[in-house]
Length: 461
Image (cartoon, rainbow, N blue to C red; front, side, top):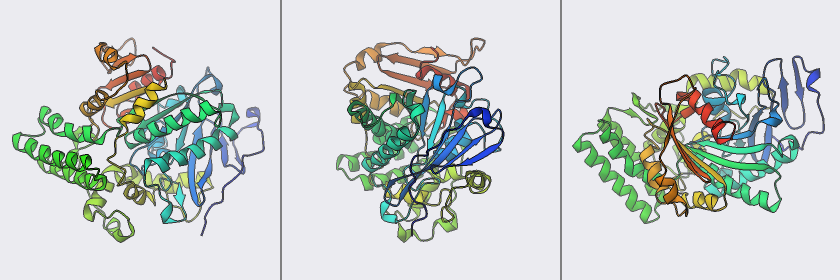
């Protein structure tokens, strides 16, 4: 039974001068505008029959510049199955934190932000039929292209605004695919927007390069001894062999096994920040109905989900999204729970999970699309060593010139004396090494992340 029908573009206009504290319900969604708060719009797009994608747009909130003078950023979260409208919004770059307090480092100071819960089934997005979950990057990209086509058609005020795709973790893999297809669509004229480039943050571009670097990285930071390094290296070789044989589902299982080996040898290091420790927990209700998944990894599957998606759906955020936020949005169908389908999203992508997309980055660079890579120094799951490894595999003709350039130290402000990051760029490719940050760079180093945003979007050098 369908819970939500697709909706047409709204046929209405509004004057900002008439807003005090007003809630306006349109066919496309809900608009909320309050004094000294950013203008917001949200809604659903049916990207395929019975597959509904939720989006949430905040207009830039800068005291001296109108939103038309600032870029638009699409934020893609990782997982797959983690919610950008939830985690990215309230834990990283949105106007409020999960305590509903203003965030000093919100990206709305420098851009409008478009959060999307993708793939379908993530966050408030949902499918009416379990056969409709995306199972590969091709479907994820296809769904996002439908969404972007509808968005720019229904929001013509953003068609000429510089548009960037920022991402994190598995969202970077999705961002690369979406960026390439969007570039093609803009060239063909099928989507009208001012696409300016993509930023891949701690991104799952080459899973094997990440896995192969785990042992050396942990060893160099005194988190593995010789015996532990040997064990991690052995399981990494198993993963490499599976990938070389195109056994990607097996590679995903072995990837989970490798993380278990690391946890045993490091006393449960946190994969998202090596300076912290985390003991994984498997909730009993998540062990039930495992037979519903197409890719059943038994207990391993649940632990993988818990570690990489469940972490972003912790109790306090879950309560916020299914409580006050749900009431505020007013359009979430009764049958939809925030994050309720996220484990199925994760498991349905298992066969695709370990496939690399280095070739897509090469195609973006060849098309002269601006590509930025940024990475947190303390990240393990997508450590910087692994990122640098796949970059060395690029076929981009200017790679040697990029590699020969010396990086430049960055500071959060002219008054600061502490190095916050290093940066290097050549032509349409750039890299940011963000210090003292883990996997979620904006959450760990908000000021530097905001500075990076301004540099990438050419508001600051």
